[in-house]
Image 1 (tube, helix red, strand yellow):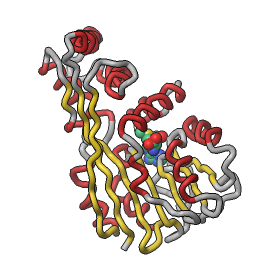
Image 2 (cartoon, helix red, strand yellow):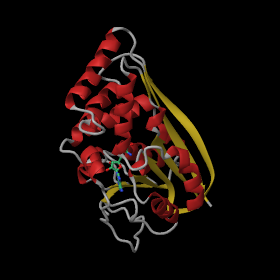
Image 3 (cartoon, helix red, strand yellow):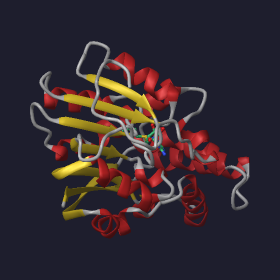
Image 4 (cartoon, helix red, strand yellow):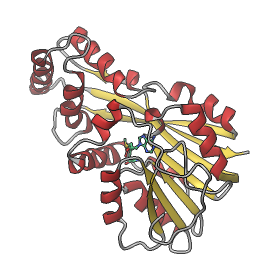
Length: 279
Ligand SMILES: C[S@@+](CC[C@H](N)C(=O)[O-])C[C@H]1O[C@@H](n2cnc3c(N)ncnc32)[C@H](O)[C@@H]1O
């Protein structure tokens, strides 16, 4: 752990990497700054769902899969300099950006690790946040038990995940759109995690799990919106999958421009926020 924060240590150690190829491709690509812009789009379009964490001054907070540190910075502001925040991530480029972002915050530190081996002592955390992380994680139930291990009784976990089957995306070719979305489902091991996450959290040791939905809506074609901004990433991933050629993907992108020019652009997606209290 760097920066002097010592929330605790754990016998599993650190650096366990189970990163699968799709995560490597999407999240550890050669351009972390592009990914940072993508994170900003998520943040601005979905709203600050991390506020569900309601972190309090003086608390010990953990930002799991912190990425470029946007949520870590928010947690740091909430707990203040009498609190502590540890951000962890499996991707070193993300941590480099996160460290730069939080360089002026001495109560924040970062560590490279897998969520299945958190560098924290048992019951040492008041509040843990994981925004868009557990849908990437395997084995998921073991990871949730590891999360429960580090949170003190009465402490809380806030998990935010998307179900891409909630996507409604207007197209002149619905069959091609379905093929794109079905192929995109393959980019993570748990694309429909929200459907089972409440039960999984309860089985891992959390009680009183509440679920809320945060809808996203883009009703114009605009490169600054989340959905249009995602099209390059989705297009690159789905090309060559389920029979989708580069030409198919180019036509899919061109159709979005066309339907936008016709004032028919429409995209909606649901994100779900789970808050559980450690029993
Ligand atoms: C979609 S990003 C979310 C980043 C950040 N939580 C946010 O909301 O801005 C997912 C993050 O989870 C990290 N991640 C994925 N699998 C992980 C694992 N097994 N252990 C630790 N971090 C992981 C990725 O490296 C990436 O930074």
